[in-house]
Image (cartoon, rainbow, N blue to C red; front, side, top):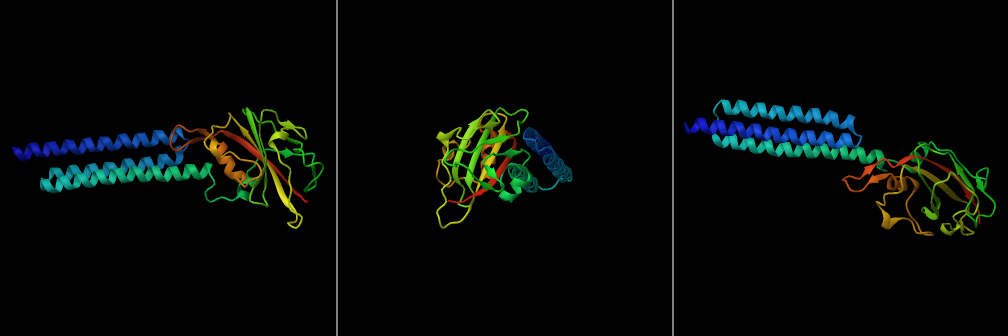
Length: 261
């Protein structure tokens, strides 16, 4: 009688453990669908469900054959440990894919530039060279992007560790020369350093920057982030969740030119 009750109890403990696994599996798929990673998460969700179902079947068969109580407890421990490990591993895998998609993992600045879709132009560019009075911020115009309410302009010296020369948050898609001059420092390559490449990046944002790295927003005349890293910063849509929710940058573009002292 005691063994019968014990087997029944263990059976329901197995089932309860499986239900808990299913709960975390569903929580996993719901979370990553919210983040827009349905395709990758769905594949892992199916694997998790099959994996956890196989453990339940194995446990029930073990219990039905009347194996030793110590073996049932050990199997339950193994089931729980593998369930936790499998769900955590699935989260880690999808999180990596997600952050890689919206971050700078395994990418170069050239990869980033090749995917730009906004057209950015400047009247201060003469061929491949910046010309005119560069002590004032250059004239810049760019595509107006549907759904964008903010545009961020970011100019760096790519030949000098991304020294920041211009940072502006605007709502219009054209700036005359000298606009936002209070947030601009002209290029000044040293006489013996040759031509430097100055790049103006423009990011179209759905909403104002979320301030994920507010304390690290650029100070002028110092090295800072490359254009692709700033894209990751500006692309943060919600900082209240972990990982941050991306999707704030709708499009981006750039224009580059060299400048001699």
